[in-house]
Length: 227
Ligand code: DC
Image (cartoon, rainbow, N blue to C red; front, side, top):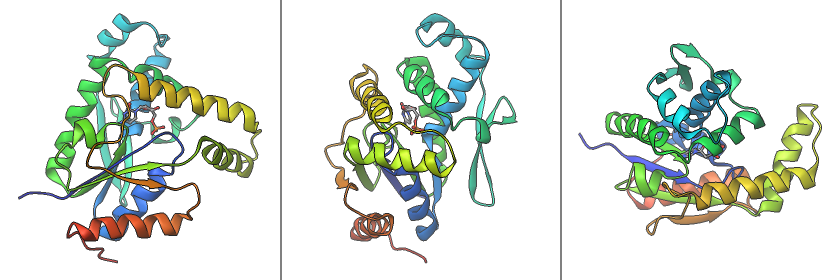
């Protein structure tokens, strides 16, 4: 049976996970957060004391890492060699390490294979950087979700402040710019809008407006919301 695949790509902080999660729920699909897989690999490298530029150590370490995805009450859990690391991969250091180490082919090959297998088994909304271009080139729906650097930094700032953490807008903007540059200019599967992806700029839209837009695009392809 052919499954429905919805690919959502875009830069860090564009709102991909919030939107993809909500759209998946409305459609009755599984949400696959591929960034979490790169983050789990990055956590392994950090724990091993491997630096982001140590390409041969990273390639060798790939053979020792097993990443598994499991769902608990519909929420994705990422297992690193059997350990549930979902709560340990969200900080800035792991995100930056994931961005730096996702440039290497052995890292990508391992995770892309796992992502393809998941999408072949289920109806999925999958978000990442290379989903529409590399992982699911035949996805029925492709979205390129973006927002201005200023808006993405503002959202991140608010998020940190809500958690009671310090947030410097200028610093956050600079980190986002660097991450964008690295994700968009790497040799292997850089972040680009797929030719057949629909561009959705979320800078001036509310979360509900973006979700409605995604469901509208899906409906045009014959995928109807269940809720
Ligand atoms: O979406 P995120 O911030 O959790 O992703 C962390 C890093 O992982 C991101 O900066 C680049 C990398 N990544 C990737 O290369 N390909 C993907 N499909 C998803 C994430």
